[in-house]
Length: 431
Image (cartoon, rainbow, N blue to C red; front, top):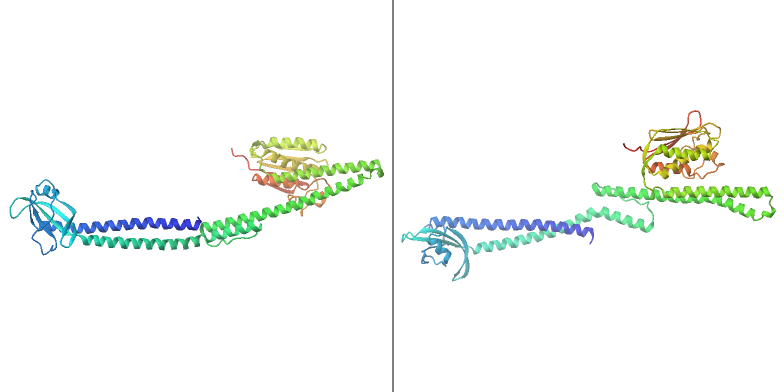
């Protein structure tokens, strides 16, 4: 069952309930009013039995306790006899009677009284033919049924039109989603006209399409860049292997150099693949937990001192707790330290500071050129001065991904008196 049909049926059902309740209320109110009017007239007639001109058509009879009656011929039963004997109060009722014209329905009022002729205890019965009330009520029922059916049909038609107009944006969204699923092209956008929830839905759908388009474009660029970066060491390795096939023509020092080149290229391949896997994995399979950032940085500094023994590493680490993925943050910190270690070759210290949830790594290398500053955190980007050094161009990109995944940020700037200053910030754990 479609959503449009369900909305139509729900609207029709609600109107059906309302109209039915209103029709039943109208019917019973009218029935009560008609009977109340007759009963009040019968009661007035019973108190003025001689007023035949005002109540022409009514039947009037006096009934003795034994059942004898004087006046119009009205069927007498035990209920009337009980009132005639003074053992019950007055009452109204409907009763069937036979006449020369056939069976009729009488509205009867039975009241205890004294027979004015004989002066004995009796009951006065005043009755009126109410066949016209049944006729009027039958006509009212017919009219109410017609009105109810007409209202239900009109409501169903209007609900169908309203649901069609209301769901038109949803249908457009559905059609767009189906086209995108069929073509694989998320560049299409839907109209966000109108207001309310539907407009918000259209806006959210377009935002999702934009994010999907950007994600696909990023993926395509990532695959293209990765392919390009992998091709360079592979080509070099293939060339060196082909040369090694002719090893009998090479001098020992040439073979040694070729093996050293192969080893270096293998390390570059390994680092590149590790970086790619790091970027692709993200935080999907890792869980955040509360850790001491200063301990984590201290651990990374130990690795840096072993990796770059000629660099003087200084530290000023403030005790700091944060809710992070320790494995990823440690990798980001290591990338910052490794980057500083590669550039800091003049014997001056690399200053590592952790304060107020911000980690700063300051080296005394050549710094970052102005034209490179906006690109150093892009994947596979390598400045002209860095192309002679080993690396894949993924280290700082990983730092940025880790920072953004944790709600933080990383920036690069020139340090006072030369060198580069990189800042990595994380939201501090609330105490």
